[in-house]
Length: 421
Image (tube, rainbow, N blue to C red):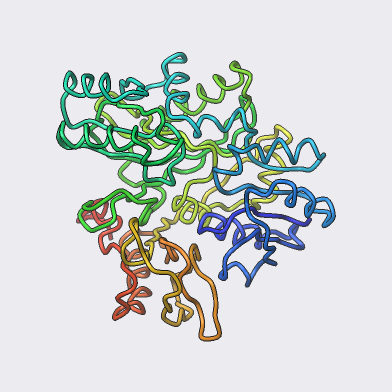
């Protein structure tokens, strides 16, 4: 089969690495891809949102299966365009992808179908939003309704911070994405991510993962797209996992069918372990990033066959390694704010334990250079989280002395207990 992966980040590179293990994949296209993907796939220079060119390439190149990585093409209806052209594609259509495209819509679905989440109100004007904040108090969360590249969420510690976030967002901070905002209750607890392969009401959950959103050690600094992750989550109670599947993922899939927005693809739930059980922070309509980079290495199935089974409504009978996988993101200095591109990376030598997933890299005559905020993820597997992380951090010593990049040095540390041997 010829497989096309649309996207250019770490999530897409991780999927390509998994597809490359399949005997069914005779050719893989990375569209537009990044420099690291070129070892396993042929890069094709078509933007992710150029539907007409992507459809044309898939038809002329006899592509058998297309997998859409990023959220923007999904919200713009790329799956609909492929389906209308008679092409096999994996991802939700435009109507179903709204579960990620509008925070307010997602909240309405959860409210109507009794899916546990934080209490909230939606606003298009600042004055009533400010009044709501003063009524509820802080801490409180302010979110842009639409897609804002992972930056449209402010966890305000004070009412003043919340009011400032409201005013900035409604004043056009994120363009159309923040013409409407959601102000919601702050939930106390530990976060985890749970993805599932979904086709209509069929839900096939993956193992849980835990992401680290804050830029700096000790969960300090601004929110990012994710600075590291590990899977599964040893400290997550089995009951919490089962509840998340039965009271969140499965009801969400049924709700979308009832709403005439039947979902096919990857449904991602960003969750929190609250005292009353798991609650939803957000839904995404695609593979998470960087969660995919630590979940896919533990999948023992052929990913091509899994997707084909899901598309046909068959149970893919997912099987998982008993190991733990951890990953640490290397980012450009200044991320998630402004940063320079084109900065040289150290030589990325082979490591006994660690692997590399490229996210924002290109190549010049000297070697790899940066092309994005999150540059790459170094990952490792082991029977034990502490040893997996030891492997990752040993590999990352190659970045010592490279001031153009930084990474967190405490990914997963809160999970490593004194009995973890």
